Image 1 (cartoon, rainbow, N blue to C red):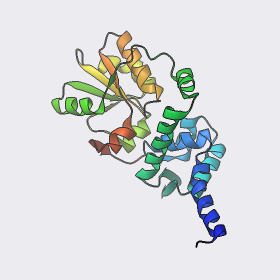
Image 2 (spheres, rainbow, N blue to C red; image 1 turned 30 degrees about the vertical axis):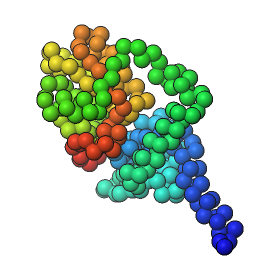
Image 3 (cartoon, rainbow, N blue to C red; image 1 turned 60 degrees about the vertical axis):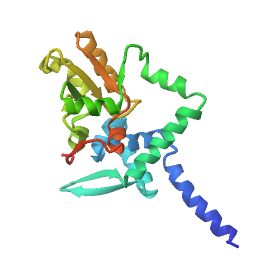
Image 4 (cartoon, helix red, strand yellow; image 1 turned 180 degrees about the horizontal axis):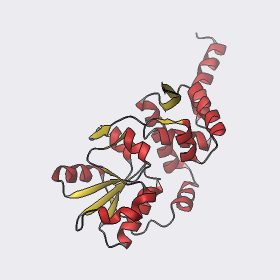
Length: 223
């Protein structure tokens, strides 16, 4: 029969992984790193925190084995330790959607009214990419696109879209995507495009889900 103290220690070890995610900013860091590796300044900018606070959260995630690093010159880049970390984050998010009593209210307060934001499924987008009859627009920040993106996508960060809409071909549907189903960049892109008379929809979720589904991506490395 196993030792009680040893079993306690084992399950406390399991719980350390959950504790590492038991903070909204750390969860957001994982959401950002699910897009690809970033240096600490880029992560801090993405989550609206100071570099010092972001470094603190990264140390907590690293201590639980959820993130790892590589050095390039004077910069340290952070990435998720494996695809299973992204899957863990996705599972936590899915459980919250299904079972958290306040989640719909929380999501609506952040996302706003999504009426008129039509979606395209991953399967439909994959078929349409093969046909080449649409423009796929990645509206995430440039470093995230540079790290990895849907094959054939064009990068226009959301803050640049208004000035670049005219560069998009006329009479062709645009499908925008960003970090996931709760990323507002793609919603904002669809609204802007539709106001300018363009046919536009958003991908039903985002880049991490596309990659997890084994659909075509192009990979690079963050600068």
